Amino acid sequence: MPLDKLVPSAQLFGELELDSLDAIDLMVALEERTGLKVNIEVFKNARSLDDVYQMVTDLVDGKEPRSAAQKTELPPGASAEK
Amino acid sequence: MRVYISGMGLVSSLGNSVDDVWNALLAGETGVKAFPEWAVHKGLRCLVAAPAHPYDSSYLPRKARRTMSAMSEMATIATVQAMEQAGFARDNLWGGLDEPRTLLSMGSTTGSPGTLEEQFRRMIEKGGPEGQYSTTFFKIMNHSVPANVASALAYQGPMLSPSSACSTSAQAMVLGWELIRSGLYDLVIAGGADELHYTSNATFDVVQAASIGFNDRPTETPRPFDRARDGLVCSEGAAVVVLESEAHLEKRGGRPLAEFVAGAYHCDGTHMSQPQTPAMVKVMTQSLKRAGLQPEDIGYVNAHATGTLLGDAEEARSLDAMFGRKTPVSSLKGHFGHSLAACGAIEVISSVKMLGAQKIIGTRNFVERDAAIPALSLPRGVVDAKFSTFLSNNFAFGGINTSLIVSNVGAR
Image 1 (tube, each protein chain N blue to C red):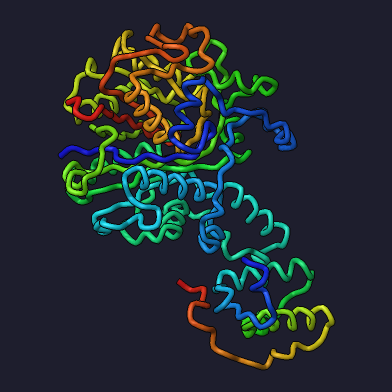
Image 2 (spheres, rainbow over the protein chains, first blue to last red):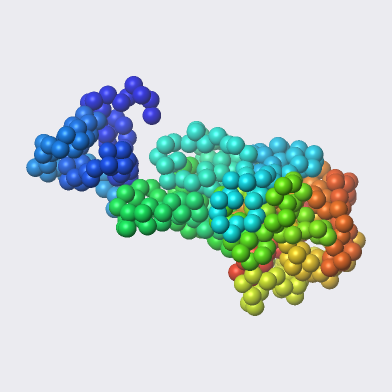
């Protein structure tokens, strides 16, 4: 993936063409890198790279996730079910 | 209805194109190398293997590669090569094909052994599925190879995944021939793939079938039919053959490379690992019967002979019974190693090249015939030959035996 596409506003499921499998693997990779458990409900709400950044910084700083209360529908193609 | 081979592609320990492999065979090269790093695996005695030549899969989309292990990458590359040779453009592989009458049929011995090991390593370390990657399973499914090929190349027609270890790709080809002859399909993309992993060596090591005495001189093993043979050497790769009905080939103006005349696959029904001469004779007899040919019509036999003590002797006895001692016989395992699910198609592709060049590639590392091997015609090096038809054998764990027959175009 070209580095110049990795800007804070880049949409995970649109511009960056991630899907459900990528999202799960991204979560696993973040957990491995930080050694911390990602709140999957918070992670499901991440839509942009900036959302992921905020989630990770909150996690590392031990803060209450700022988007934990949000509940949004997954975009098309983001379901892992077959 | 005649069935032709119209395309061939491969990734192997001798090279990653049909021409490169043919040149390596003519030069008598081997893909076998030392793997001293595998000595860390307690009890593993066979420290040699034949890895595939480095290949470039970067042109495949990320979403295709993320669910692929090496076997699927190699199979995709081989499929593209084979389809291109058959006359289909890389950017429009299925253009002009009636997809419901096209079959993708390829398999592997197991799913990716390295990925399977990693999955269980993580599972054991973490005490459960926490931290598993979502893409792991798609590399270890039994039908991982054709599923990934289809996904990478946007293929949407019928798909099968025959899996019979070392006879996988041979079985896929024979099955393809059967299905085209039955009228169900016009074109079958048949093949197999496997990737190198120390557990494959271990499987054969445990049953005393792996070469263990040549770790310090890897290029001298395996040694099919030779007195000093001490077992097989695992390899990896992928090989794909496009089989096509005569009518379909003519209709689209394609060019046949060889005629796939017939084949058969039978079970021993007696033993999981011990090869049986009568079963080998039976499957070769059935293959000839289906071809409408006699043993004297076969001008060259490409033997499965992997370099094991028992397997080579049993096959040599079956060939003696079938063809006598004048028909040239060779094994290519001394060059490639044993690429398991890929070997049947690799050997057919190599033998089609022999047929075209009217040359036989003799058995590499065959120096002195073992007393247990009948005095067959076992050429060494590269020899000129006049032949129009060859028979190729593959025998696999699980007691499954395949034999198939290929002729020059117009020979019959």
